[in-house]
Length: 399
Image 1: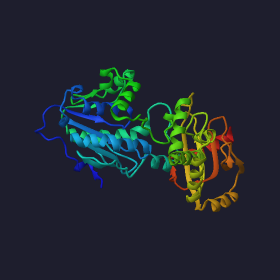
Image 2: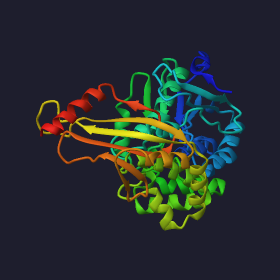
Image 3: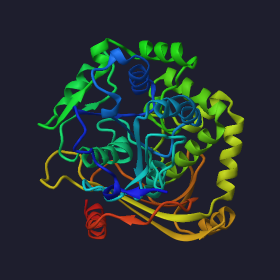
Image 4: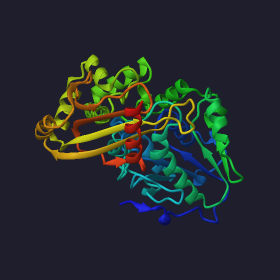
């Protein structure tokens, strides 16, 4: 049973040495660091009593990674009595004080990994979107970073600590960026860079001591894992082995795409195209079942892009209003859509939309349509949207 951060014990005053906190992502890099420290005492300059391993659950990790961690890493932590803290979100928003962050387990004898009550997929589905490529990985910050920062602040309680992050030997820029967050208490530490280890060296080390080739840690719907052809091939193979993960990725993409046809998990393509090209029929079958079993809704979707506030050049402000106007079975909502206004269109994604207003190229740009999709998206409208919509509608008529 999960607990709140205020029930999490800090570091005892009698502890000696500087605490070492490892942010454990369950992937190749952080696993290599942790296993080497456990197997080779000479590789570390601290006692294991001063080590705390923390991990945050996103709710979307591949089953094979969960299995590997539970069968290899957790038994090793138990043998050495290393403190292992699992955390996750209990709600969409978290605070620096730890509101919305739940401690799933805090123990020196872990036997299993626990699932967070609120997952990254919950966040994506309720917003009708997918993780965004480019810039800061907001999805990782929300599901991992914010949770880990809170738990680390709680357990260190103002004492000095070394924060271990698994940056590889060729990730100097990431280490430099992370070091900007150092304080008089927190010191970033990157053992793989000290050892000169890259991803291949980490993978070979894990294989040598465990007999397993550790797979990359990622959510089953991670768009960052599918940016390259090699990445897409790897993900397709994992979906072949874990079709439920592929089906869930298709479900998430379908919801986001219904509200915005440009929202896919693969830039310039889609997870649906990847599944079809790879011949992943079991993924498609499970996805079809998910759709059939889901409650559906007819959503009214309005989107606008305003002119820049200064009246000069710029992209302007984009805002969206999403509202469920009917709920029922998939078939019932399909019939309901027939009675909605607008021009009936079937997009390249195969999704039927009734377009009331098609987006233009000039600002203000407005878009308005009705669409049927699983009833998982929350009604949401940015403050001021209605006045902006009326203003933009008037402008569009005048110009």
